[in-house]
Amino acid sequence: MDFMSTASPADLAVTFRSLPRRLRESQGDAPHEVVAAASSEMHGLIAEAGRLMGTNEEPSAIADAIVDTHGDHWDDATLARLREIALDLGRLLRHMAALTEAD
Image (tube, rainbow, N blue to C red; front, top):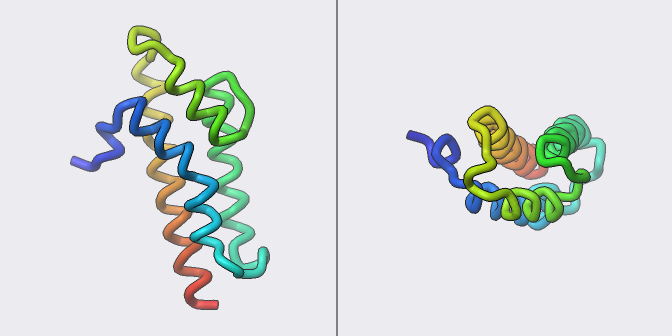
């Protein structure tokens, strides 16, 4: 079973908090054109996570909202979608890193 499919809200919060650093590491010094499509998809997913959590598109705000949500207030659909978003973000970060290595 994949880690993110069973990730707790606390795990998801760590994922969102680490996004800015991981994005910088994945992008490196590559020109924006090299990673533009993946970056655009990533920002759409982050915006969706923000909407799900009732906050803005800042990863730290999303992480804070996740941490601030009491365990009894989670619904399965929201938690499942956040897990899917986290998986997709990881995939996009790896894709960006591969693009910058090929550049």
